[in-house]
Length: 369
Image (cartoon, rainbow, N blue to C red; front, side, top):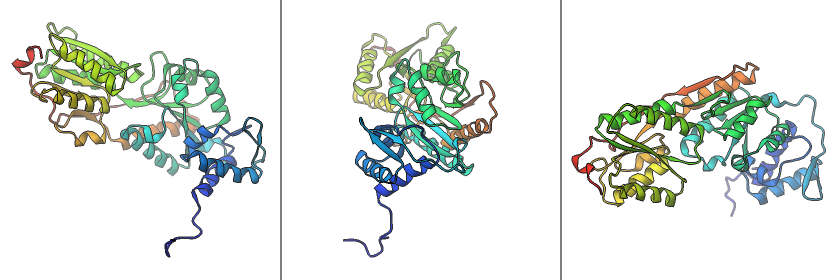
């Protein structure tokens, strides 16, 4: 039964989706033909059935026609006074925003607000397949031509993706570390200094066997982290530090952890790149009868909101996502205005939150498990 206070004129999800796509068509977001249904449903965050119903409305309005093979060819001419690509910022991500870690979701949302206040629209493009491709050049060329924007914001990116943007004429700013030898402006945490500092925390607590757990294949930020971690242990005789790569799955992390704990000299310090693997490692250590931090100290390079609900609290490095969004937004707007400084790097230094998961090494830790 309809509520007496319900608005009978409130648009349905289908009408809302149709209006969002209609607005994008007026902005000349695409040329030639519409992207596929999968890309559109991700971009506008609607289900396939809702999208198809919205597209039927727009087809009846004469915006496009459907050719054999379901290719939707654009027909309607837009007004010459329409806004152009100079007011569009494109955001290229390997995952839908809902699947990103909370920290990334927050700064992305704040970035959208920041750009909107400056008169820009943030359009999301999901490109999981490009992250998996060793040669994404042709697809990226088609994407950027089909969806013109004043600036593209690249969420991290593989070396192949970053290299294409660096060599193209497409204005691009990276949220994440740029791979070695590639010149792109970027905003990221100072992972190298962060992990050097984390290693120093273990050293000052007397740990002599410290492992760095990172997910592979690693992005540029993880490589920088590894360098910083290993730098801290140089010229420190008797200290055993090493790097272990896992596949990011719970079973893969457990397998690596099992091997570490079965070693004759197990590590007493664990530095982990990402929050979810850190949560799993800490819980698995406790499940195996180890006390944190008495038997094993744990530091996470990153942070996320859910770590606040784990006990003992895991030591980690915090950065305000609002600051991340503001610094990234400033750099994006600088490029959107036509000012293209080469190799502009913005590095944010997070604040260390020691909490309860790191302590001085105990004598018992020198014995095998």
